[in-house]
Image 1: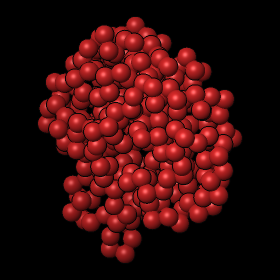
Image 2 (image 1 turned 180 degrees about the horizontal axis):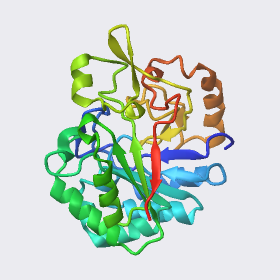
Image 3 (image 1 turned 135 degrees about the vertical axis):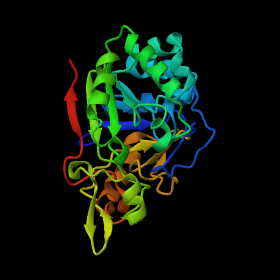
Image 4 (image 1 turned 90 degrees about the vertical axis):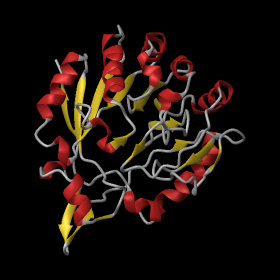
Length: 289
């Protein structure tokens, strides 16, 4: 599929945390192996990289290693992003087959001790995150391990702490990223004082007319397939308001015909006001040796 090499199939819409910047409605749905296989087969030859997550925490899915195996066997490069606060990631018998069937894993660590780990990721426990880091770090696997840190105010000047965590747990790449705060287009001074990094390179907001305004940027959507099988134009359509069709009953090329019609209107949709795609580089990647 020209221009969209990445597509996501949502493993689950359930989540164990309540993050500050997340408006995603938590659900209780887990995709079945049969439905996942049906959807993935319809994408064969169309895409290369397949994300196994969207609104929920993918590692809550008990069969995620099996989904990753199916995706890899069908010729995709599967990957996931996880909040690392999930009991399944403490089990080597879950982690090893999962990593062996992933091209890469994004490990989201937005706190560095018991006093910071749940500031943003409300409900996370440092002991759980720390143990899961050890399990993933000790796994003998070719899966690339990437660690992403959202640079909130409480992380200012803490880069070396995260570099040390990354080195100790065999992380291949460390990413310092600029966060959205509360998924708000306009940021009140109170919120800015609480969350916004003092380092301008980590700010995704600009001071304008006495307030803070989000630096939205160029639209660069990748289609998302929900846990139900419906296809959506991008990751901002959390409430499933812009369905392009149902991949269970339709073919991918048919749905992508509707997608191409919708593309010129993206950027003008209400959901696009909070697009996460910036108009400047906000991720600072470091290789960890």
